Structures are given as structure tokens and as C-alpha cells.
Length: 484
Image 1 (cartoon, rainbow, N blue to C red):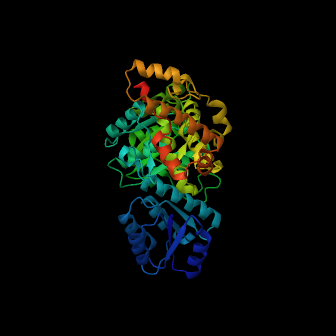
Image 2: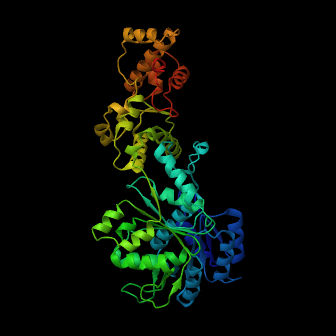
Image 3: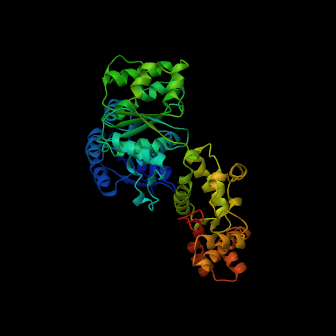
């Protein structure tokens, strides 16, 4: 469970914040002095810190700098009175996540803490593409062993340690943020902050302020100076998602940062130097946007130094079983379910579907299937209607054993021609595959009912299903022996 540390010398404030911010999904611990807060950071390793500027034993800025020495990536939110906002600004310049002026609106504070927790997860939860760690569903995985994904892994390995700008191209839902985090975590800046900005999710009028900050009074509603992401991420990495959606004005300022490593806050005249590695991502063709006059050609060349292209899921269908396996295990833990497999016809449907929303859509479909599953095997009926309507197996998605009837005489002829001397075992295996597939569909994936229909124990059923390859480790029925 994520842990929030509140450091404030006022007992009533500590109590109110603990009650107001603590939820079923967030644990809150408190400290009343700066030293106690620093010790709690060392001992408990919280996911975020809410730190008051006024403390009895030391300044909030001094406490923040000590906390930053322990973990430079830990998001710290500063609380301040109007008279001490300059201290909070200094803390933000040195990497504080944000600062809020008292009295703090609880909803604004909750939203800020939620964003800080999300940032903490981005920086601390590892992203791996090591097949040896595939059984660990508590980490974020780039799953897939297809040639297309192997090329992506090699590209990450080549570019991670090189301190250059990277452009990640790929359709929505292909995992661009995971690739960016993998690059960051394998880079020389991995001990420093990682911040993310989604250009498509922020209105044009606010995006420039979000990236570069603004001075007090720079525009209507700018009641205080705000530090932008380029200052907050000093020394670390900034991930700019959907870079193709930036306005021309923001593109011009972004180009200057890449070229000169300097910028000004909105409404300010001071030139601020920055040392930040930029990883950009887009779901558009920037080359086409340049030709259409929608994206600066000089900025495109600045971003196009190193490009990693993520394939859509429909171009790596062989990875669908591995992805479904990983997602089932992750959502089993999250939802408290014990689903252990996918019926063969359901897996054929998933492999045949084009997945316009890519891995993100697959993730949603698997989670929905677990919620609707009546048994411990996912059947076709568990999945959303869009998958069922668009997932009729294509010729390339169906393996030689993907049949609903078995011509024994034809199979005997094939085995005789191949010189087989274990005909009984092979034919018996083919019959079992069809039988158990049909019974699982009939029982809607409920193993207890399936065992009753077959007249065997549930233990025997589970052992038989595993031997036939119906487990989540295989997903699809293994190829029949007579095809060898």
C-alpha cells in the first residue's frame, strides 16, 4: 500500500491531514519535527512526503534538502504560509514536487498527493523486459518475445546509457511510457527525477506553463510563481508524451531548450539553464505533420536523432498469449480472483482480433473478463462484445489442431504415412483436447461443474488440463504430435 509521510508541528493539522488523506489505498504516517521526518524517510521509505515549511527544529528547506539526499526521486510537496513562499519556491527549484499555500483546500491537496504518488510509482517501480522475471507480476513488464519486440529491447539497450534525446513512435496503447521508463531506469540519470508531461492532455494555454513555469501575474489566475517541469526535473529525465500535439509557440520554446539548454518562465525575463534528458513520444507521424505544416521541421530533426518504433499488437499476434498470461496473474492479485487459464477457442479469438487500442485495450478486455468470469477458466463469453464480434479466427491465427471435429480415419492415414508407432497415444490426445475444450465451454469455465460432467475429480481435471496445455502458461493448445 502506498505510504504518505506528513511532517508538521501542529497536532491538529497532523490529525486532520491523516484523517483527510488516509484511505483504503493510502497509508498515512506523521512526524512533528524535521529530524523525525528525516528518520521516517530513512526507516519507512514513503512514496510521497507532505512537508510544512515552519518546523520547530529546522527550516522546511533544510529538511527537504536532507530528504533529497536520501532519495532524490521522492516527491515532496511543500506547505507554506504566504510569508514563506520564497522558501517554498527555492525548494521547488531544488526538485520539490509542488508547493501549496495555507489554508490548503483538501481536494486540491488530495489531487496533488495522488499525482505525487503516481510519479513515485513511475520512478521507483522497475520496468523489465527480462524473460527470467516474467513470473513477477508486481513489476511493470514489456512483455513479448516476437522479433519486433526483440528489436525494441535491443534499441533500449543501445540508447539507454547514451545521454541523447530519444523519440518513441507508436500507436496509442502500445507502451510508449513503459519504454521511456525503461530507458530512464537503465540510464546514468536513474538516481535522479523522472517527470512526465502529456501534451495532448493539457490545454495549449497551460502546456507552456506546465513545462517552463510562470511568474506571478503572468496571466489571469497566476496568483503565485510556479516552477515548471524542466526546473523540477533538473539533472533527471523529462518524458514528453504526444509531442506532436504541441502548439507552434510551445514548439519554438521547446526547440530552444533542446538547442541551447535555456528557457524563460512565462511572464519572466530571467534565462534559466537546464540539464534534463528529453524522451519524447508520439502516436502521429511527425514526418507527415512536418509536410502538412503542423510541426516544425527543425524541431523534428532535433527529435529524430534516435527513434524507437513500437509495433501495434496486430503485428505481433504471437505475443498475445504471453500478454494475457501476465495480465491474468496481475488482475488475479488485484481483484482477488483465481482464474488459471483461457479456453482454447477464447484464446483463438483474442489472437485473431486486431486490437485497435493495442495492449491498453487488451488489458481492459482481460480485466473485464475476470470480473465477468463464472469459473476459473476464461471463456469466449467472458470477453467484451467488441472482441467477440471482431475476433473470428483468421486462417493464420488458427493452428493445425484448432478444429471442433476429428476425422479419426484421416488422422490414422497421416500417422501411418509418417511411420508413427504410438498411434494410440496421439489419437487419444487429440480426442481429449476436443472433449475438454467442449466441456469447458459447456460449463462456462467452471471446473467443479466440468469435473461433474466428465465424472472425474477436480484434481484429476486440473492435472489433465495442464497436461493438455490449457493452463495460462500455454494459452493455445500445443501443436499436435502428428504435425511434427
